[in-house]
Image (cartoon, rainbow, N blue to C red):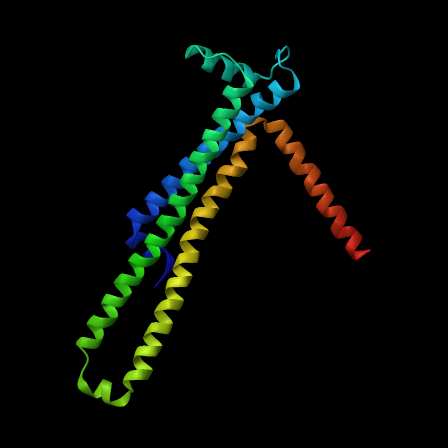
Length: 193
């Protein structure tokens, strides 16, 4: 079974998984964004020189008649992290749901093939060998499918986490990547020297 045909066959499952991953990425981004005013408030309680993000969040809070405080920032940060954790649980749940939906269909197809087989098929293969092979192969397929759906979720999470720094500060992100690349290349050059 090809990967694309498998994804196409369980399109609803994978679409829901990807949607949940994108929402989880947005919530993780919100958590990081609320960490900025929290750290600014810890450094300077008067917020005399706030960042653009801190100003935006303070304006957003003031529209709800909420003033900036350590309690407010930390509460929102903790709530974002709790919601983020719940979405990570949903991601794992839907990964397992895809795995077991595919396994259920494979079991059904295998049983349909066995019941429609001729008697000579069962005479040539021992029943113990047949059932053990089937169980072993289906459990291997199930483990692979579980890993594959988790991998799909993690690829989308990686994409969201790589895009987020570019949204917050593109120049700093590019400089950080260049600096990290220089360090990596220096380590590689030192290893071959």
